[in-house]
Length: 452
Image (cartoon, rainbow, N blue to C red; front, top):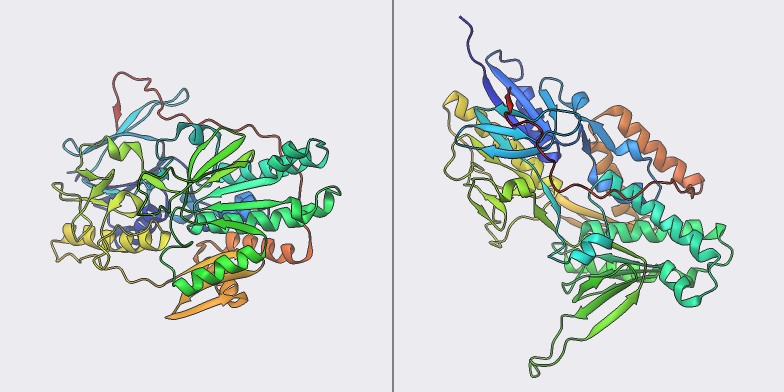
C-alpha cells in the first residue's frame, strides 16, 4: 500500500522562504513520508543588501543571485507566479502564461513568505516615472540611467536642462535609500573623470525623508554621524519632507513641519528639476495576499505568537507579509532579512512540532545588530552591543554580509569584485536595455487547472 506523503508548500524564494526550506531540509528532508515544495516567481534568491553596489557597478550583476536549486537540493521547485491561495481547499494556483499552463498545487501545510512590493502611496505619476530598487533589473536599469544622464549632460549646452540631467533624487531615508544614495554618489564621482565638462559641483544627489531622521531604528548619534558624513560627501538630505508628484522632469515636495499656531497655513512646497527619481520610500504586501481569503491588517496576514495564520492551523506566514507587532513598540517589525530569517527558523520548528504533536515555540525576536554603509568606505553599525562608525563599521558590514552568502563560489566572486574595485575604475559602458513595464497580473490560459 502506497502512503500519501504530507506535502509542505513554501511560497516565496526570498530570505524567509529559502531559510525556512533549508531548516526543513536539514531536519526532515530525508523523511520519506514528507514532500517539500517551493513556489517562487524567480528561480534564485536575490541578495538584496548588495543591490546598491550592483547599481553603482562595484559588483557584477550575477554575483548576488543564488540559484534556489543549488541552495535547496531536497525540495521540488516550481517557478511561477501565484494567482490564488485557497486555504479551504488547500490549493495554491499559479498563473498560466503564453509558454506554460496554469496549475494548482495541493498542500497539507503551507508557509507564506511572499515578501512585499514597492509602495507608491497612490501616486500614479511617481509609479510611472520613477526608478525602484527591489529587483536585479531595477539595479541594472538605474546604473544605465545614471551613465545615460552623464552622457547627455556632457554635451548639453542648455544650462537648465543640463542641471536636470545631473540632479538625482532618492525618495526614502531608510537602509535602501541611504545605501543607494551613497553608492550613487561614489559612482558619479568615479565616473566624472571621463567627462571633461562635468565638475564635482555639477553633481547633486538629494535624499528626501518624511521623518525627522534618516535610518530610523538606529541610535540617534549614529544616524547623525551618517547624515553628517553624507552631507560632507555632497549629498543633500532633506528631512520632514514628502514627495507629492514626479512627471519625469520635476519632483514636487512639501515640507511636513507646520506651525501649530497657523493650522490653515499652506504647506511649503519646492520643485527639484531632475530626470531621475529613485523610489525606496516604502513597501506594501503583494496583491496575492491582499485578495486572499486570509484575514489581513494593512494588507499583511494576521498571525498568532507561533506565526500561524489566524483561523487556519498549519498555515504560517513569515517575513514582510506577516503582521507581527514588536511587543516593546507595538509597531510592526521593519521589513529586514534578519527578521525574515528569524521568523523562518521558528515557523519551520513549529511546523515540525505540529507533525510530531510536540509543543510549539513562540516567536521572540532578538536583534543581532544592524549595519549600513553610507559611501566612501564609511558605515555605521550596532554590533555586539557596541555603536561603531566610520571605516571599521564599513569593514564589519562587508564581513558580515559576505559570510551570509551561502555558496562559496558567490562569496569568492563578490570578494574579488570588491578587491578589483580597490585598484581599477568602475566600468562606464551603458547596456542598451529597455525599461520593462511589469504586468500586474498574468492572464490565465486554461479553463481547468491541472492539480499537481
